[in-house]
Image (cartoon, rainbow over all chains, first blue to last red; front, side, top):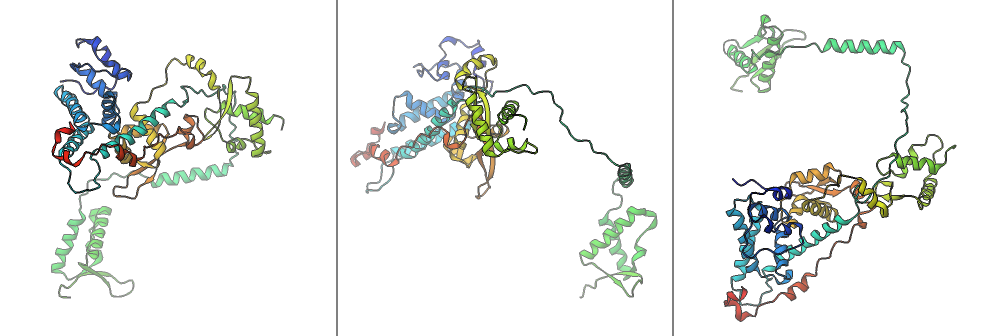
Length: 279
Length: 195
């Protein structure tokens, strides 16, 4: 397995296992010499480095165009496509992991090339040269590539610009101390105690009683008794949890309009009854 | 006031490791707050006093900063053993796109650059405080809109975005089409002419 993309060019330079190390065109990495050997023998890692030195497929294309001493406006799509794909195929053969963007560009170029080969409609149409879009993209990209280079030249903090600093004098930040009346402190303590009281730890057990289950139980009981006293639904030995579960079950049933709650007189007993289906 | 205003301001500028604004300067005074005009004239004094010194007063986006004179920075740089990190092409291109075309979405950056912009790259720019999300574009997916910050300008010693180097102009597209060699119609059936 060839190792994946090296982001650090130095790593490759240290790597001595590849033959003809001296002839490696690492020079291109430095962006000065742009001559590629004709036979295109390239040590695998160098190719990765080569790609790493480009900011993307458009950058790479611009490089190929410049290498041919061509103006962007005069690009020969067929030739560029050929060159581009030969590089891509080479990388593929060397199992270099390629960014998908490079493949997208290869597909785009192939499509463009095929469009160039197709005869243009005879009628006088204002159809754009198929290359126009590519040219536009290259130019737009080149603009920002140049802008980036210009930005890179601006004096930067800690590179060309250094902020002047003086050692800070000894000082203490005076956060004023405030007198707190003892009474306030006691009150605060009482408040804390009260809260501590409330936040007793509760051990939450696995829900032994399920609300759903209780709902079913109530509905079943309703089959035999049409009128059930509210309090009789609660089973004391189930404790608080049982009460809560039963209550939740009643509320759920009420919400689903499966039961009705009735009270015949003020403060009188509350009963639940089923809703007649014939309603 | 027993201390001279310009001395106090110089102390503030030297102690802060960042640019400070006139408002911030005013805030440090308790009772007799100087006016903005007074601050400005004191800053002028400091600036004039720098003529024969190794430092200069520079105004950047977030305020004022005392810095080593640009002409002397070569000497200072030698003291710094570690060279500040170089930015990758990807970082610089992304940064310049955000700077010139803000607010801009990641998709728009990718369209021009022809490359996917890594999440890490964007996060890096945001962590450095140079780029921030200023909103969402109202299109499906609501992509974030990115802009540069004052810190970005500070870092490059600029006060305003308009001080950035001029963006290379895009050649007139109409003229391009004129320059494109339009093949004569008879060569249409002759594809190898393209090769």
